[in-house]
Image 1: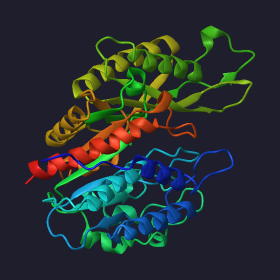
Image 2 (image 1 turned 60 degrees about the vertical axis):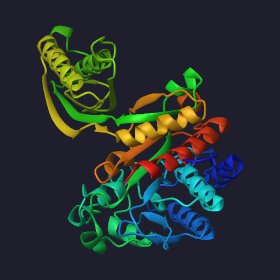
Image 3 (image 1 turned 180 degrees about the vertical axis):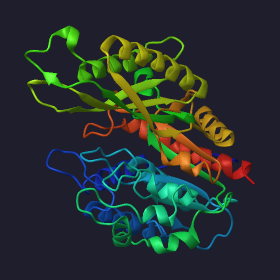
Amino acid sequence: MKGESPHVQAARLLDGLRELAQIGRNDAGGIDRQLGSPADREARVWLAQKWHTMGLDVRTDAIANLWGEDGKRAGHPIVLGSHHDTVPNGGAYDGALGVLLATEVVQTLRESGIALRHPLALLSLTGEEPNDFSVSTLGSKVLCGRLREEDLRKLKHRVTGETLETAIARLGGDIRRVREEMPLEKERLAAFLECHIEQGRRLYDAGENIAAVTCITGIYREVIRIRGEANHAGTTRPEHRRDALAAAADVVHAVEALMGEASLPGLTATVGRIQVRPNASNIVPGDAALTLDLRTADPEERKRALAMLAASVADIEAVRGVRIERELNIDQKEMPLAPVVIRAFDDAADALGEPRRELVSMAGHDAANMARLTQAGMLFVSTVDGYSHCPQEAAPDHAVAVAAQAMLEAVLLLDGRLT
């Protein structure tokens, strides 16, 4: 990289964020832009027009991922992007920031007239967020081959019954083409770079703007069922109770206690759902089912946590007189990101006078799937008070500007370092 780099137009980026945030805005101030919704489709039209105006060739692939490419350039592209869909009543930054920051970086570089060795491409991935089709990171899973055509044909909207195939067709894709187009060949892309709000408060509390992501957490989930005995609420004495809900409460406390263990510093553990039967006010609960969500980037830490939980569960069974059954739901391994991209983000931070901060992502992202295809990396941006997946979600304007410039610097560095 020679000479001074061009400067992004932060005001243009922030204006774009505000404009995109109007698509799907609800009366409560949040954004509803879920997979297959009218707002999802409207956002695609808006993005496509913006990319057309920049002189890019815009296309929609088989799973409805939206691409903006320089059709005049051959070679393996450096791809920048994220996703534009939201959770219900979501915020304006999750995903959208990554897409529009990528857009600003590519637009700035095109306007500067700098000749890069690699072509650049923009990508807004389909259905990153969990949705009523019961799939998340959809577009990137299909790109890397984790989901095939036969898997996609099984998926239906849990409320309306609409098939995923119909929804994808409405967005400009065609599931029938998945078999011939995907997965992409490995190394077809030179790199994939995703910018995202941290969705936590490590950067915000430290007063820092950006961080390179070293690894995307593994996600382990179980369904835990407690088999007790239903009985009369008024007449059953404590010594005769086999209360499934009380035992479930003990399990919840055991899960929460894992996060206080000194030997598990990088772990989060959550019970996010619980169901009780018969669920009546005058009956001692006979059965309960809950979900365990356990996250860490360290497989040894996961093993230790599960061993500790197993010991706690055995104690609860003995004390409460219940039977506890555990069923694995998800065991998604952690995904380390590419050292060459991490180093480029660190060097970009140096160039901007920012700390060389590296963090593990404790949320899942498309970059974890893209890392199966190419050298992938992520840049985190400070998140105000750690709020995400809610209307309060925001990133400081200054941090957004720093992140955009850091992404541009990293692209220039990688253009010289990648083959």
